[in-house]
Length: 136
Image 1: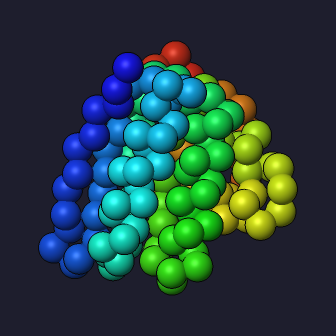
Image 2: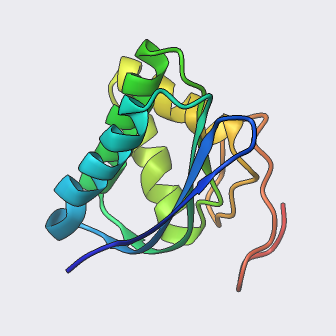
């Protein structure tokens, strides 16, 4: 199984990666390598768009938390944008875990676009209605 990636460079030197498909054990390494490759180029910022992710397991959340930590260590602004439904919920669970990784993941979520989820989100993060979800 493979993830689909769409990489778009921003005119300000940043990168936005749109990920599509299931993020599960079968693709953790593929996602990690893709994020590492972008971070190795030291972009002005990195946004990870999860709007087309259909499944995100906890291991995938940890891959994203690792990328957030690595970006933070390199002073690269990092944001997770358009996480919705189950993916947003899993990210919130992972971010509630160990302090350093959780802090970086919470910051990445807060820096991104509004999160669409049926579960509560952190203060300062807005939600908007998604398919079958009521706006907060």
